[in-house]
Each structure stands twice: as C-alpha cells, then as structure tokens.
Length: 151
Picture 1 (cartoon, rainbow, N blue to C red):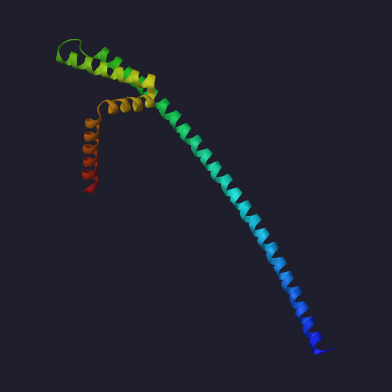
Picture 2 (picture 1 turned 30 degrees about the vertical axis):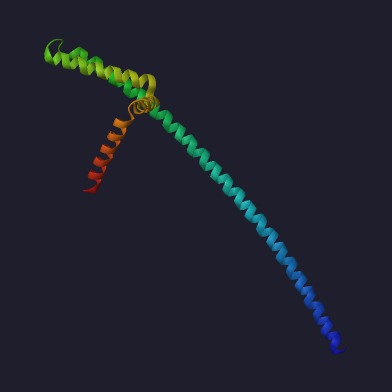
C-alpha cells in the first residue's frame, strides 16, 4: 500500500471514530435530557405533595384551634356561672363579681359562637373604624417589645 492510501485509510478511520463519538455524545445528551426531565417531574411532584400536606396540616390546625376556642368559651361561661353562684349578691364585692361574671359570660358566648375567626374579624373592623389609635397602639407595642428584647 502506498502512503497516500494509508493516509486516506487513516482519515476514513478517524472520520468513523469521530462520527461514532458524535453519535455517543448525542445519545448521552438525549439520555441526560431525559433524566433531567424525569428528575424535574419528580421534584415537581414532591413539591406538590409537600404543598398539599402543608395545606392539610394548616387546615387541621385551624380546625383544632377553632374547637379549642369554643371549648374555652364554654369554660368561661361555666366560670361565670360558678362566680354568680358563690359570690355575694350585694355590696361592692357583689357588684364586682356580677361585673366579672357578665364579662366572662359575654366573652365565652362570643368565643363559642364566632371562634378565632370572629376575633380576627372584630379586630379588623375595630382597626378600620379607628385607624389612628390603632397605629399608635401598634407603635407603642412595638417599642415595648423592642425594649424588652434589647436587654
């Protein structure tokens, strides 16, 4: 064989190796793309599952908090009844006990009927009706909290 045919033969073999390398690289890229897509799908599913579980947990906690508020409301009404039974009916102590029992009973009734969401709605209404005092109260509370955490 002549040197030119050997050179041509070497060039052909190099071209074959290059073509095979390109095919292998192309296959590897396709498989990497498929794996990346699969991993992305799995990550999306996992994120969706976490979101659903967090939503369910928040709903469950909210339901339990509402039930606890209703239970506290019932307890407040029971304490009000107990105060009325055992406190004196007349005099300063009687007047004070009636006032405390009335406040406990109305608070308990509110909690039983409206729960925590009712408290939030009432606070929202109160803030809308009195925005300036609400902001001043918030600033004062913020200042007190800042002072207490600084030391």
